[in-house]
Image 1: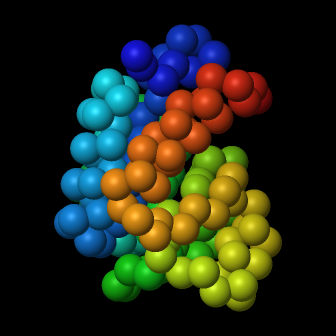
Image 2: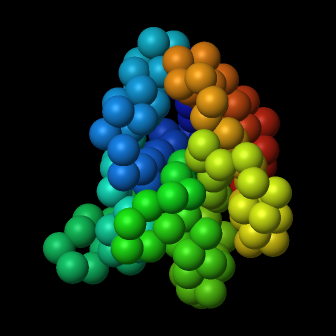
Length: 147
């Protein structure tokens, strides 16, 4: 099974923006467990993710199409700051971003949705939640048509 882009049948590249090694490994294991072999790139904070998406500071730009899974609470640049920077950048403003966080705070949800995130996912029980996340990404990419 491979999540495949509707357009041009290109594989979906996933940019995981997560500072916690344990959570990053759990997401990667969840993708492997359901036999989804899409490329997963990782940035440890919003600044590194922006460098990757712009292909600057020695970082390689991920091939299109891509989707971001963004942790909310990270050092240097948090998830809300990253998505805000994406929306303000002419070349990156249409990036698909899901927030993946432990925060259930209403203020965080509102801030994320005000920046047009595709979804806000609370990671409460790592194993099952990450499997649900993989299913969501798989369904989203197969069903949603992109410009």
